[in-house]
Length: 242
Ligand code: PML
Image (cartoon, rainbow, N blue to C red):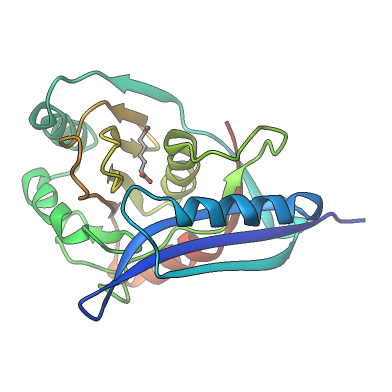
């Protein structure tokens, strides 16, 4: 008999001059007996976020069959200690070079266009074309969680949540890397992740107090393959063993 699992997605936003500003989002896959507790934790998180008070909170619960869920081992993790954000950004460029990704400077230039997006930019690294169907929203990597649900997951853990996301993203055949800067003003560690280099934490990518952050999924292939990539990122259910 298959176990029933539930996908829980939370997103919170604020209205600012008629525009929706993203505040917080989270993804969980849980058994039924933890559903209520997890929804309460995510509501709490949405209500108390350092990016501000939410005007709109959406918690979506969907039942999913265990058979629909794929499993992956987390990418190996290394840490790159840097003193300044400038040095950290330089590391991102170096890691792209080591991964055979050209146009590092131009790609980093596009990071600022991701500030405030709910999802990530999907960028063709060779042509620099953006491939998201909706550029304002971006592509949201969803339906994923850590495989070990026995752990205490009541607190937001930037690192673990990002490692789960990065592992799912990196495993698609057209993804050659990912860049991430947190949009949490209090969180300055970011990362570069790829199948080849693993998950490389960079201890400072911005100044403390800065709310700017975002993600770029680095795509290589024919643009027509982007549709399958977006489908994978947005709908393949995935549990990641950390
Ligand atoms: C986010 O805020 O969602 C991004 C978190 C980046 C985590 C980087 C790390 O600590 O490894």
